[in-house]
Image (cartoon, rainbow, N blue to C red; front, side):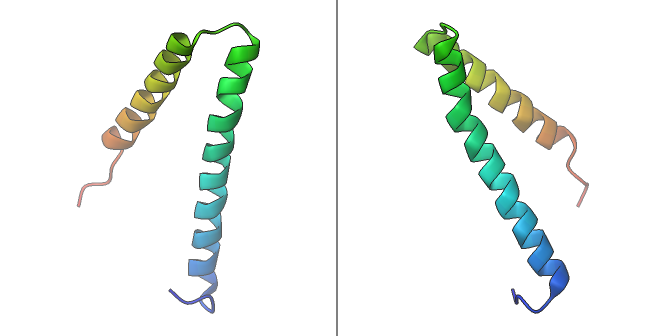
Length: 65
């Protein structure tokens, strides 16, 4: 990849922002759940369900290759 190609640079930047937001959510979500009285088991179930939903969404909406 070259940074001279503006399209590739924009896609790379968008990917970095998306990863940052995803990481930020997974830092804030446990803190939020803990302050609202969720147990470790409940946090695990919530996190697992969210990941399962996102993974299922991605698998169902893949473009055929």
